[in-house]
Length: 191
Length: 191
Image (tube, rainbow over all chains, first blue to last red; front, top):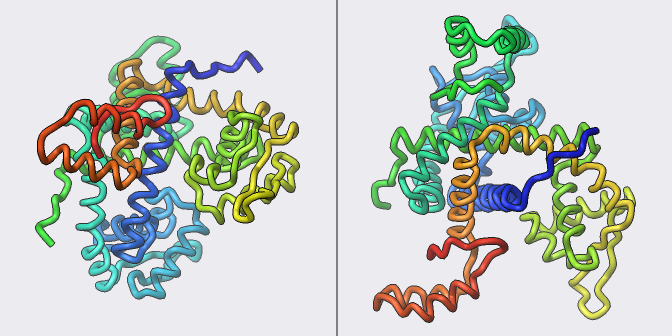
């Protein structure tokens, strides 16, 4: 292996501050939700996803992607939430591997009760602390990192690489950007 | 409860982009460490902390704080690392509740072997993606959030509140800033 591209002292300071801020923020919102709403953050995120889906139902596989959970971890969480009456699972009649999770009225009530306290915790820890400029930059930085890590269709990758090689046909590039569009803003940066 | 201070659409976009970027980054570094070094990120962080401590030893309770782990989760991880020969635990002769974790030479070899691949993954996902300005801003934003969430001594809190009430004795404030100094840069913002 070539000599590793070690982080400079400044980069290391940034990376550690970032890791620590993320870890503390996570512990903060986890504690708040457990204390005030009696649910782990992972459940909260599942309920939010379901509450915002059409008909408040999602395929389990899509829910796993949306919440960045493994299938097994999500299954476990949904089983617990089903026992609480917040979610109802339903097998997919046309696809044995598919299953759906429905938000129940009790689940909707649970998220509605939990949301104000959670939003207040997030606002106090993040938005009250940062200047409007910092908030805007945090959004841009997050979108850049997210876009860089978004898995891309190999065919699109291949075409982009070919275009990079012969320096750019803008029409094709726009088409790729559409194929690759994420939810809410894409910086257009190639991965 | 007063009407919750809901997030605006822009704030919500920033918050979701941030959560997603953090989640994807975490999955990325976790996968990389598991694949290339056969260890979860939690072990990596423990080994880094130990390798940077004087004599490469830390009290378990300090290690739990440094890695933001619960005592039980850390105990579990350290037991696994002890079985691999990377760490050696030692009871504290003067304090039955205290115990120390020592990094072994094999543990040092493990972190040395894992570091280049991990640094490369972090560099590719974060530092290669961001402009120097964005890196600097990410550091500032992270330090601001971290400082806001850092638990403070109640006595200091009380004095700060009293000072805020009668608008400011700068000498006392400087003294508090020193008491409160974190590792590597403090924005000086009151929590």
